[in-house]
Image 1 (cartoon, rainbow, N blue to C red):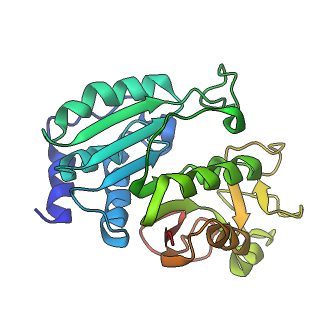
Image 2 (tube, rainbow, N blue to C red):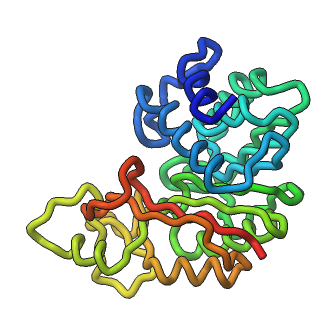
Length: 263
């Protein structure tokens, strides 16, 4: 089965349960599966993903990418890390039963504090002890880095470096500020869905009037590319910039994307 046939099967399957609270992770109930399949396509086309791959999904949410992966990984191993306990329970109940007999799927609750999604947790990311996960062929963070301040981002880069095998791939989505995006965002005539405050020194920028809230976070593009290199991801195998800033660029994706290979 090719990738498009698989996505169509996921989109039309009666076994796939779309969560009522899909808006919790952005988007809506209507586009829950289409967004998940879009990320899956990127994994299929831009990484070395195979039916036997070991895959780590950091910020697995309600499983919108896990659904197509559950149909794709025949002998593979999937781990989803998620800070919202109800989301983990939903995925364990509705996605794990759909997986192939020889595939291993598990969703792990990481009880890390987050103002929006897990405010009752007491442990900060930098102090959290993750289980021994081993190494993975493919690691991805979809719509996660867009909610991280610089301190947490640096910590995640260290973890991703640790969790990705040599020659493995790391895919992440971003709001990246290059010269064109900066010019567009600083134009007072334009109205922006994401009005980032670019008055600071960076490298991370937050929404105006949000007092450094992580509701959305943008980064200097050169800073992020340097982070990849300094954490052993020196080969950028795919990169495109989306239209989130108002600059008309890559069609079909809102956020920016980088896929890099570990040395």
